[in-house]
Figure (cartoon, rainbow, N blue to C red):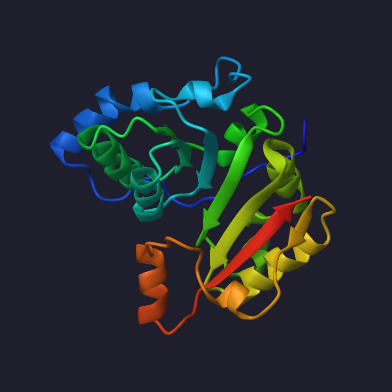
Length: 228
C-alpha cells in the first residue's frame, strides 16, 4: 500500500443547505450511483456501468460537474467515475445523472485516495484533475493532491500509454505539478509547442473555476502526461 498524507487534500465539505429535492436525491439516489469500496472492484471496470462502455475515465475533484457531465453526454460509450467530496457539487451531479438517465456515470463523495487504492492495476484509460484546490499558502503545500505518493497511485491505476490530464490557473501549482511529474519515472510530459499547454483539450466545455480565473485575470494551463 502506498503511503498517504494523513489529512485532507480538500477543504470544507458543506456549503449552503441543499434544496429539499436535492436532499432527497442524495438520500435516495446517491447510494445506487456510488462506488461500493467495501467490496472488491471488478477486474474489468466496464462492469460497473449499466450500459456497455469501451473504456473508463476518471475525474478527480469534478467541482461543479460541468466537465464530467459534458464528457458523459458526449461520450455515451465511455464509463465515467467522478470523485467530489463537496456535498453541494455532488448533489448537482446526482441531480443531472438521475434527471438525464446517464447510465455511464458512477460517483464517489469522499477522498479520491480511497478510490485510487481500490481500483485494479492498469484499469483506467484516462484521468482528469482539473483546477484542484491549489492550497496557495506555502505551509499548506503538503496538502496538494499532486505528490509522489498520489502520482504513484495514478500510475498504478492507469493503463500504460494512457494519459493523465491536469489543468490549473495557479502558476505555483503548475510548476509544482511539472516538477513532480518530471521526477516521477511513470510520467512523461507531452509537449512540442506552447500551444500544447496553453490550449484546452478537444471538446473542452470550460468550467466555472476556469471562468472565475479568467474574470480575475488568471490564465489556465493544460498539461498532458503520458503513462509510460
